[in-house]
Length: 179
Image (cartoon, rainbow, N blue to C red; front, side, top):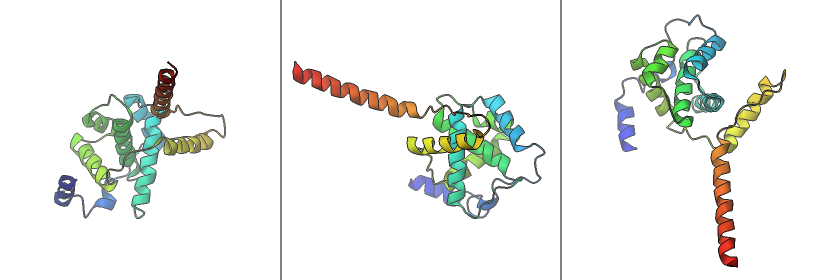
């Protein structure tokens, strides 16, 4: 942790330009929907990655109320949060350079965005199952108005596995006691 704090102090972009880190010089001509479709097409990230990225964006805005999502920063914020969420959720991931190509900028820039995002989030990336479920429900309500869309809830699996293992241990203990 002390090492991370030293790095944060020496990063030239960490102090003065925090609010502007995701801004690009000119507004991208691609719509947000087209950009998300591009990310999905080339990364094949699962639905849970997008839910976790949504949690990260919400947290980020909560940690930095002075930050305003705009047409000049939304694309970089999206690709960064989706990449970080992918690393958190998925077992296999693309390299930062691949995400950079998908996002339309250099690997150096992608690395810088990721690093700055992590420091600005205080490395608080854990999303527990109840928070994940809450965001899934919210998104399902938002998009389900017209057709009842359901999000695949893969984060639940870890909790279910743990509860099954606990049940099996209890069963084994009871079986030993009765024998």
